[in-house]
Image (cartoon, one colour):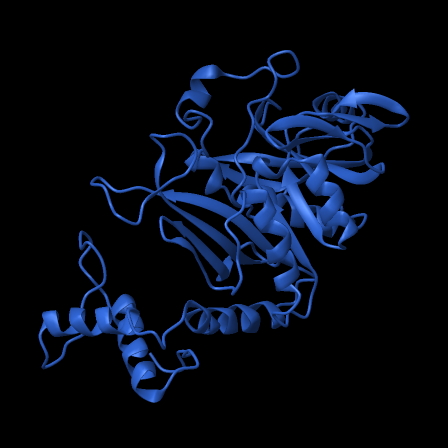
Length: 363
């Protein structure tokens, strides 16, 4: 319990903060609904009342409460031997069984709840989470945030301000921003690259220029396999079983106009050709059947074998996989029925991990 970082608050509030944190760390029964009060002479109600007063104290700001988390994240990231650190951007809907006055309409009329935005710092050494560095909560009363001045804007418009904020956190290594398919936007790719930020995004198949030819990215993945460009980087867990992890990369160019909604209408927005790297990550069985595939686009520098492992870790971290195309790969629909849930993130793949063992199947 010693050595817990505390927010920049007065000593009395720091003591209450430590008591609440220790309550979260305190062991609770398996089926407990949440944290439990620490053994004390005061009652459980008194502990609850103290927590309520702390959280409603005007001197306790979200900016102050995030400082201990950032301190831990910085210490772990900066002491790592990895050449980079990942920052995973993600959005989650928080729904309630009964209507809550804080809930807000998110998309359509029946889509009501709270929306949590998280920027999670992740180790580039082993893919383990280090600390949440930034949090936003969209409510009926406005946007609550650990960063002052955060505006209530669309998901992708939240990313660049967070990228800029990350430069002020004191990290001593480059930050690779990892974002799921929602960020597959040519306009944002160009803007983030122009601002000098590194990113890795899972994309849908799109038309790019590869070796002077215009092709879909899944066609490029097929040709890379035909040319035996895939490298085996070990094994990974897939739905409780071991699978082989294969990775290939190549340089591609995004040259087409971006599609952007302006005043409710879609417009084509021309832009400079953007050279990126296409990283194809596959999980295969021993018989070379493709179980899962990721098409990743990044502006990170040209890789060596060691950096291939970075992208493999990033892709297995949170990004859901796409079933291989029926026209390209053979795949078992029954096998996917258990993990592909209405285009949501398959839980089995989000828990996939690499263990570094070698594999020997042909590409």
